[in-house]
Amino acid sequence: MKTNAKQPYLFNSISELHKALGLPKPLHPLVSLVDYGNIRTDTSDLEKGMLFNFYKISYKKNFSGKVKYGQSYYDFDEGGLSFVSPNQLISASEDEGDYGGYTLLIHPDFIRNFPLGKKIKDYGFFSYNVSEALYLSEKEREIMMGLFKTMEMELDTAIDLFSQEVVISQLELLLSYSKRFYNRQFITRKAASNDLLSRAEELLDNYFQEERALLKGLPSVQQIADELNVSSHYLSDMFRSLTGQNTQQHIHNRLIERAKEILSTTNLSVAEVAYQLGFEHPQSFNKLFKSKTNQTPVQYKQSFYQN
Image (cartoon, rainbow, N blue to C red):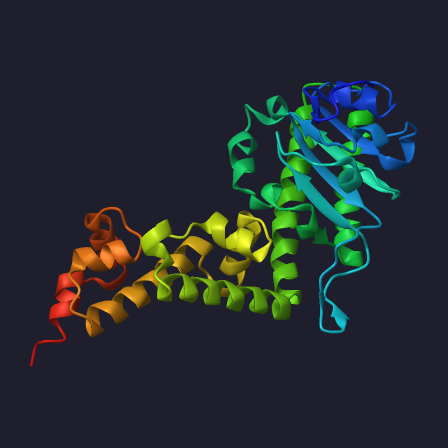
């Protein structure tokens, strides 16, 4: 397997990946369930990175990266799940290490004409980092393994008109359980999650207090996530689990609190306040402020001068 050392391997089809891993051709060209124990080929040449043109859901028995907070680990020891969306770069060291487990490969064309074809983009964990994997309890592992086994049996039988519907129904159930179990993980990681939440709020407070917004513009979700070394989707889902609001809403809330402080304690005009907070156009600031407070900035400022 030869290629430019600087370029990751691109796999446009599941068959191509099977061949690279030394596996037989998949029974179905658009979906496959791979047992890690059946991989016999040397994958070290893939360590420069891989790009898949399909979805990948992996269960691994031995999964590194559990969260430790203080002297305690906040994750289970029954293995975990990771999720990769099409065109997401991963390395072989993240993907094909010395562990047992399964990988489910689904080409977008397999689900395209089903509701899941659109809905799958709503599952944010497909954009999580590898370190943000889902760690399973024993009961959760049994549920997931049952779903994998059902799909495996279906794929091993003769393909008929119902095969696709059966596999997709099991896939939808797996994703629904994954969403539930991730929410549980946010709760069991509550101490670590609350610490991350506090750090995010501190970052936002410093951003607005130091007037960095005036120079750099409004802070983005991606900027905050990068500062905290987590993926933007993981951060927003964690915030939503703990507070009912996503990262963007937190940014807006902190911005409005700072705006209220400036409006009530300085003689700056509304336009000047808007620019100081990173808005290019005062109209955008006015619209956001009114949506959050039911008052325009001018009305809020004037309320401090009324008897």
